[in-house]
Length: 87
Image (cartoon, rainbow, N blue to C red; front, side, top):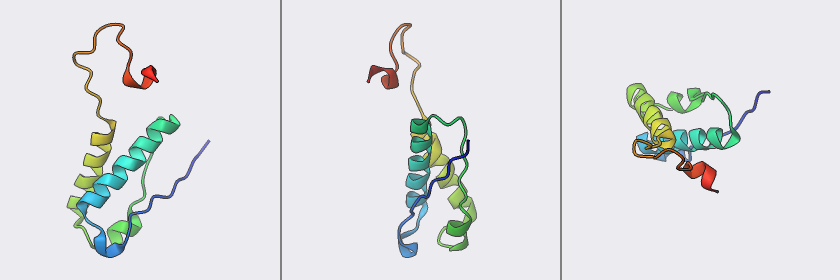
């Protein structure tokens, strides 16, 4: 089963690395909440604006996904419920 989502990035003039980082984080968070095992984002249109250099764009997108999916569990004891399970 394939799902598709649209993600708004705001006005072209305000497109910067931070907006890319936030958009990637939103996409990752939503994918997790839907329980998908993997997802991809097509940034073709946003990259084509030239507002953010390709290397900075990729870095910001990767940082957004990583920050949104990071879970610190080093000191979580055995039997301690994960935050997602506490709800």
